[in-house]
Image (cartoon, rainbow, N blue to C red; front, side, top):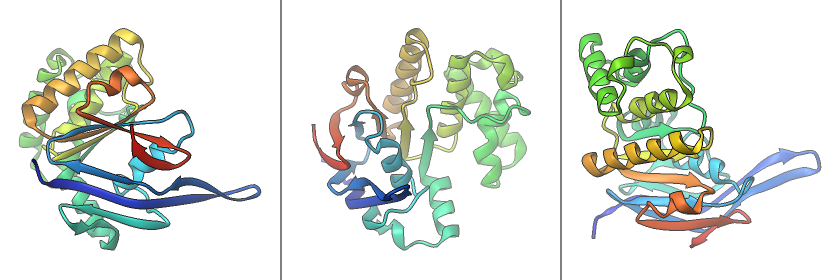
Length: 226
């Protein structure tokens, strides 16, 4: 069996509310092997997005532990966390968050440019991955000139361009119609099969979750087997 890539244990998270703290995450555990695909299921408001943000070190839990290949992520400084995300993670969100003033190719190349990769190499790598996602004819188009499905594919290209070992996807088809959502899923899993990255997919869609090798459920803030 593959080695453990990511491990989250007893994660708790609360946010201030009108009548005091609102508990969002209340424990449980998550383990992910290298190259594995895992679906995290749960209804709206169950804390799935909060969990994904913590797993991706975009937010911190109130308590618990989070390790990547045994490395204590909660003990890292801000600069170290930024470097970790840049080198190891890719993010795909429900809303693409593309920069409207840049082309599809420039948006996809952005993580490489931030990481210090030269412009020519970054743009070439971005073009290559966009072509594999059937967007070779849209390289120079800006987000407002792209359909919703095309914009989300650019977001997938941006997530994958740095060859991450773990991709975190938060309801990636939630803002797409059924046809475009299905096409995006096929492309995402085809790339996963080809590149071998681990995938955590947060969704409320049972059918989509079936595409993953394993599923767990988040209920009342607690992670457990599905």
